[in-house]
Length: 312
Image 1 (tube, rainbow, N blue to C red):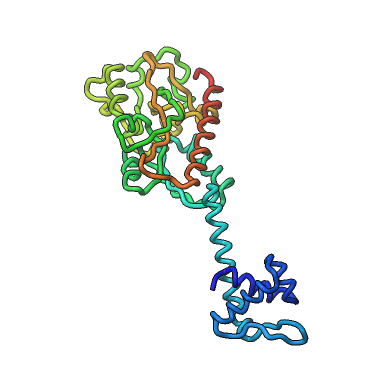
Image 2 (cartoon, rainbow, N blue to C red):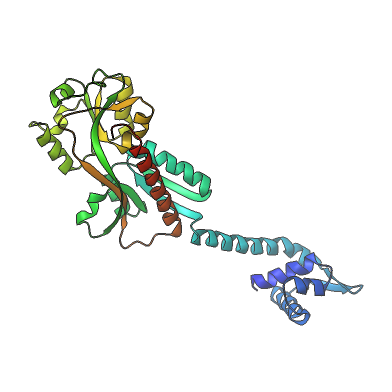
């Protein structure tokens, strides 16, 4: 017994005559009759009786009808689901990003995916690059957006570089230094300095220590450190804290006028390239490519908005 025979059986239930049922499934009447007889033999019960020149379903046929329709429906739904997966419109995707990308990438991306891919299930991890790399290598996520330099000496990784960030010092637009045009590190250190710990790689830390002559170690000079960027970002609104951060993490805050980039000399002449990192030996399902394409679009939109900011 196969679903083709079940479709023939359902067609005969739904049509008043053998010829009409055969025509519906694009078979000749003899071939259609053989299919019905074969199904009856396999089930070992009569399914139709001829009465008044018409085929009428037996009680066995009526009892079997719901099961037959369910089997055919499940097959059709299964095929549809596989076709949706093949086109990237269905399936599951697990990915990760840092919390500093919440405003510019995570929230816009999720909004877009919920709207454009309603049948895709999303598992999202928010963390810094090192923990996300562990999740990737243990196959708990398919890919993540993070520091592209991680892949420099990692042969098991493939990276697609997408966006180069700059670094700067930021404060509330109401901060006493907000309108000062010539700020040095001594003026910065007079206020609470906050940082998203774990966000800067060792090369960045070393550069900042050398640039600002911070001999006792970079992190010793910060009052608050957290791996949650949104927490340290909130401190700019609620206090006179000064934050060292990437420009991508502050675009929305600068756009709204709540935060300003401080004119510090020497400036933080640093860059960070963000990219999509995945395992080289892992073949990703089509839905992952759809999601990665949405990430690329979000980065392009962010690049346009960054270029429109004053003094960028």
